Image (cartoon, rainbow, N blue to C red):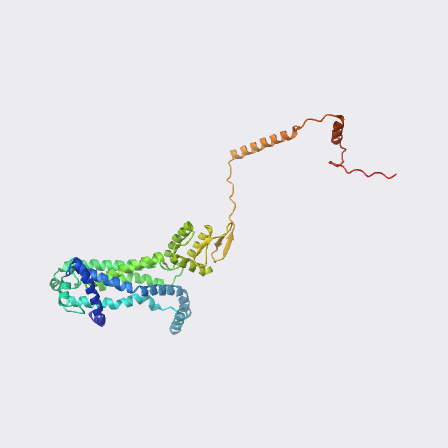
Length: 419
């Protein structure tokens, strides 16, 4: 480890300078020789480095998702050229070039952070060896050697001898208890971060060997941290535990707000988004509009969660627009997508009347019969009195005594006979 750290000695001066500047601030609050002043200086160094690495983290997310998208094509190439390794590598490189992806992009944050990690290790190792390094002079060296974090010196290791620990003003028990707890927390945070990625933010529709490798790494990395952690000084353990917590929080934010398509996190996010859009009738911000726009642009290539989101909008009387906005759809029809992505206009069915009981049907039938009898009685009763006079009576009798077979109603007058 010392040999590797010495390779990055060129960056120890900038790292030591940053730590000293933070130490001036925290030393004024907690005291120059306090473990809090030196410990918080290391934590602040981690935060500063991780903020600077955010653009690389964004590239890592894009590269990881691009690799997940290419997994089916990569599997086809592996099966097609399983007996020809050289042709398989050539086709893989061709696929990467055509899609503009780079497998190493997913490792950029770790690779970029490694020099700072080894530089800090080199600085703390110099403190333990009583050597000035970088901008840390004799007075700062004495101050750092007096700094203790929960009773353990900043430069002490789990594997140090009791005499070396006593020279730093502590006991071997305190050092081993503190370092063991930090190693356990470091391993657990690494395991939880990887598990969170595998269980929530992985496309469940794609089953490839890549996912099996990620599951294996989920258990391998914590074990590696536990093995190598016993050789790390307390200050380096503080650095690595802080960066693990930062990574875990950063990943939780990404999973919650920008999940991988096809993952369980996307299903939960679209469910929350659908609930908000249907209650307010619009998207809240630019990020939500960008997500809706991407879903609309996919067309028939939408996954089940995205199709469920579009159908939920349609059932609520809303329609997603190509620009990411949401408007009210036409009344009377609901556009629902089938499993193959084909939109279908479904007219809402008429609501069937509630089925009545036997007693209700009998009561309704009796009421209808009574109403029919009442109307028949009214139609048979005379509404006007009979008119007086013989002509009227005779006329009425003549109309009533129409011959059988004669057409009812007014008769056509007969034409006069020609004589």
